[in-house]
Length: 448
Ligand code: UDX
Image (cartoon, rainbow, N blue to C red; front, side, top):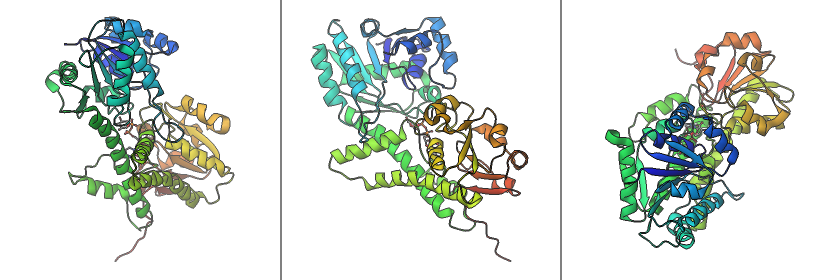
């Protein structure tokens, strides 16, 4: 039984995991090589915004169940298993940059050389199928000098949504364990059994390669679902009286399809989908396969930006010199993360047309500034963002934007016009102003 665990890489995935494990009777030691980050976390501050994380971090620090370090030696001495949660960014060609995973496994393995104990290594970073059984296993054996059965190794993917990471750690749909041998599987399964207790989710036990592929296939499938509904949204825009929201509702009622991930909009962004979809395409190529389906979902995702620009032109005519207010910059609501944010892609596109951009976001202004710099005016309130503008575009569906009504738009804007790129609003409530939305067909009054 293992009750002392390490977590390496204290970012969006690792820090919530470390805090969650520490809150459930595990002794946790979190490691990050970024000393500033470690100092910040020691003070109870979270470098990433996650619902409930700050409170949980403070609690586990006070209880003494979470310790922090930047020393691999210390982490290995104070744990018997370790979850690797470091980033796997993209190379310029879209393939996966495994540098951080390799470095981490090397450092862990070198420290293991000096201790005479069984140690379980659990990889959570998203890596191409085959990486655990080949690259990671060989680094581990070479650098630690340990032989099979003197160590354990699993690939155990995470399916966390940003902003909801803690919720997803405590209530996962499933646990996938890709283990190299029986003992590794038993030990990791036992950690999860003690973590979840009575509410243990369904578990799939397999080899590391299948587990690695399950992670990619899940993300590519979800991105495909979104691109599919975005394709339908483009069709709806050409069909009088059609509405993609109703179509999504209707097809989603089929249990085999399901309603989730059928929200049409600007497309998928964030730290996972764009990176994983590209990596999967690249991986297929390396295997001698050309995934036309995956190429198409990327194309559809891109075309939703052009689609939004086209709708903006229909509402306000020539874009040059127009003032546009953008509501929402985060890649989705509930996070301050702007990585691959579709709102930012849209802004970049508008800037090419000589549009003046004012932008608002409840949480992501600081991070957006780092990308867009002084090319955009950042506003503290929605009203300030709307003032004097020719078009308001809802780009990220933060719940607080739902309050917006046509009176507010009329009061503040030069010309009241709204483009709903996330289908947050009821078109009926904006009848007195210019209104358009992704996936909404032109109005045509026919009939008796
Ligand atoms: C995703 C996966 O959901 C998660 O399982 C995986 O581990 C990491 O990637 P995340 O990136 O946090 O999580 O966000 P998610 O809520 O899945 O949204 C991803 C993107 O798709 C966002 O840009 C979102 O706006 C968009 N999206 C999502 C849609 O456009 N329509 C939908 O119906 C759902």
